[in-house]
Length: 269
Image (cartoon, rainbow, N blue to C red; front, side):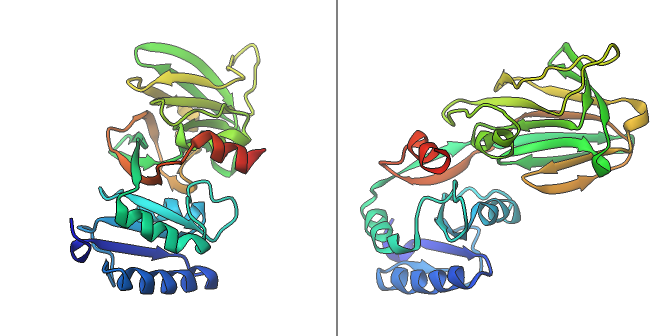
């Protein structure tokens, strides 16, 4: 692939520093022979997302999880997804031209939400959250494949990918998981143990081929709020939610020296 045939999409949030970084980056890429699309080109070769982790997630959702690789430039706060800083633009272009990078693939979590009338599919890069509408306590029956797991009572449950293990899951006391492992993690939110409801109080790790089935008790069909990567979805008369690791692959462009555990230490220790 020659540079003149390489189409790059630049997506930026509305912060002044992000817009200025996008302007400078576009100029540098053009000088180096790359084609920078004015509007998002679904047939492009790379997405460069400028912003924070929220911008990164919104970009993937907005453009329907495109097949092209994506890399982020951090102008936000934590920047766990973002691999570059604004002062590293020249280094990035130099390495990209040389092919001095790797592609890491991650799988989203997929939730099939079935109401009494229809089923709706949603995806999450980090997680899918099932909780009570207006923060009410909810009661859920959880099964893993063909095995009944528990009668849950509490604020809700969060099902995270390894990529999302460092996000909301981590703040709930869940485990950090190496993204090279294809698993799902079920983390309870304020579980209640009574004579009527017995809930696990720690996270549960399940393999990639598992299907998690959640049935709200009848009285709670209209009390469920579902969120994927922070975006809320509200449906009435939910009878079942099936959650599994999606076969879809998200391609993350990384420098070859990238290390997940170095990033984790940098951001959390």
